[in-house]
Every structure is written in C-alpha cells, then in structure tokens.
Length: 228
Image (cartoon, rainbow, N blue to C red):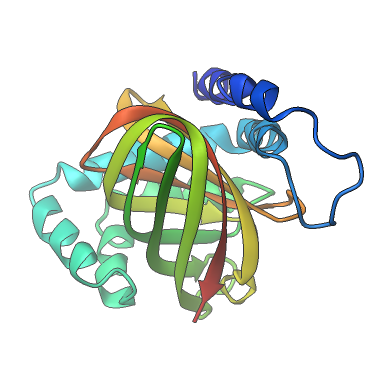
C-alpha cells in the first residue's frame, strides 16, 4: 500500500515537470530536479516501507496509550531533550519499531521528535526537530533539526509526533538535503512520510508524522539537516 502511494505521489509532479520543461543536461553536482527527487525518493522508500509501517503502528500505540497525552506534551515542549524522546522509546510499546530498525540492513538510527509544516498550492515549508539515537552504539545520540522549502501539489498542515529511522549514525546527520514527501496510510493510520536524501540522492533516512494534521499533498523539497 505504502509503495503504491509513493509511486502515485511521484506521478502527481508530472504536470510540474511538463510546465518547467526538461531543463539543461549539464547541472551542478548538487542540483536535483523535483521529479528526479520524487522518483528516487519513491524507489528508496520501497526498500524501507515495511519498517515505516511498523514505526507508524508503534507510534500510534504510544499516542493512544493511557500515558500517551503526557508523553506527547513532553516531546512537544522540548523535542531536542532526550529525556522526553526516550519516553517514547521506553514506553514498552515501541519495541516492534526498534526491532524492525535493528533488523534492516539499510538503517541503524532511531529518530523521535516533533514536526510542523504547511503547504498551500505549489509552495510550502516544514521541518522538525528531535533526538537521533544510534541502535548499534547506544551511547551515540544527538539532537537533530531539519527544515526545507517545499514545491509540490496539494494542501497540507502537519503538526505532531515525528518518528523515523536513519541510515547513518547521529553525528553524520549534517548535510544539504533533498526531500520527497507524500501522504500515506500506514497500518490504516493517516500519516505524512518524508524520505530524506543527500543532495546526491543517497538515503539519509525517513520520518513519519503521526499526529494532528490534515490535507493531501505530494511535494519535493530542498533543505538541510544538522546534528548537535
């Protein structure tokens, strides 16, 4: 289901590609066209969609638990504080997500935080902040923030719990980024997914927004991510 949605979201950018034209054939090494970001983002997400579904399900279990409201309030108040984000990891309900990331050959780092963003029509912005925790080296963790300018189709508002997994250790989350974002129903839960790539379209990781939000959107974005 999720891979179908990512492919459909990528195809939604076709009118934008037609309007802008094919562009030059020789570009700077770090520039990527929106449709190339969407295509590569969809391909990369297909490799981790099972993990994303498990993260969405585990996050929803935390949100709807008796202590969920308190946990969410703490994360929202200071998402870069590991004491707050570890309440999600240590809730007793997030084990399946942790195990899914550990078992995946592409991923190694959990990300828990809070997101906010909006898009109306073709333009928007967004981002999030939280804490990245290395599952291979538990002592390696870092506050992380990212932001982006979005270009796409649709309208969207997202504010809420942000969970994700990264392909690199926390200290390496310092890069210019290209992002492919789309609405998805993971495990029957309304979510927004962001596939975060370097400016050369190598996978950095992905995040899933589970929380207050609405709208339907597919977008690509340019931004940065920074640890510390």
